[in-house]
Length: 82
Image 1 (cartoon, rainbow, N blue to C red):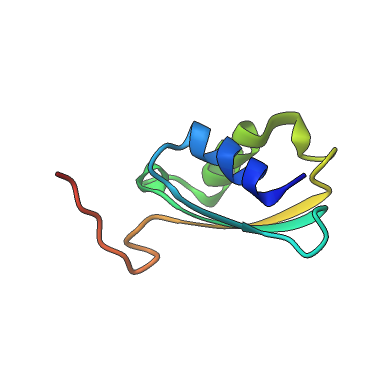
Image 2: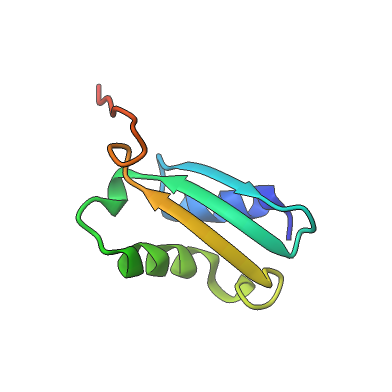
């Protein structure tokens, strides 16, 4: 699966998130996601959100994926609302 397709699925489920997916072989991936939606959530709940966004692609087109899931504060970023 192409990294842009994975990023699009995640962004559809988590509008406003900062999403970066990398892969050397389009089978094994690393996803770095920064979102306010992770605030107050355990690591497991964060992973479940991403698993739900990717659906059946996990285990099929996506053989393996590691996650770096943070809030903007955890990532050392500030949020702005206007």
